[in-house]
Image (cartoon, rainbow, N blue to C red; front, top):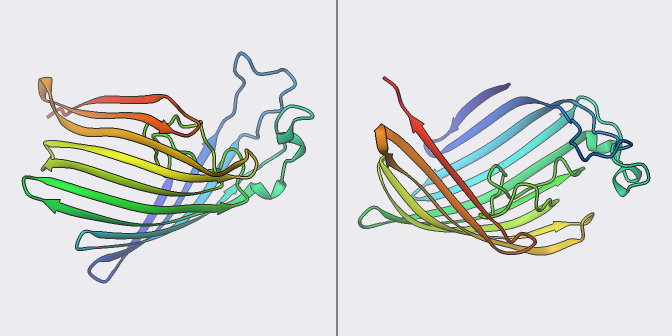
Length: 234
């Protein structure tokens, strides 16, 4: 569930205010220990303020979020660091990030893009820290969603590709990040990955979305593949 309110800032800027609520249900897996205390089910309310500015290929963004869990209790194995170090203040936490990006358009539908971003927060725990997978706020291609969790990170992205309207898009992307997390001992941990993204017309009037990634440095050494087919019916 979400509510959205936006307002232009001149000809090139915009201010967005978003409220969202998400329900999380934790359940046991087959190998979960019987005495493991599950995290508390419940809603997480999020209020986000985002400012954006786009002009002449430059993009500036600043975003801050206040988050409130409806209920949050100690969780983990009895005697484990997670349970012993539980902080009730993590029921409320904040996330914020800033980014600057630039795109250069080249002849023959080519383009080069670069982006630098910083992510940080307060009162973050295992379930609210930054991750670097496909659905993460800052992505490192090739990384699994739960491989790294960080309290803050500095990341850069560089891409080269071409696109022809909405019919064909293909680009190569390189990602690097320096991640920090006191709990897991990360201090400017280097994460790096390389990916190929694109979409094109497929058989039977479908649209094919392709996303390939391989981890190049850091705690992950795997790869990711996402392939989707979209079919429009008239």
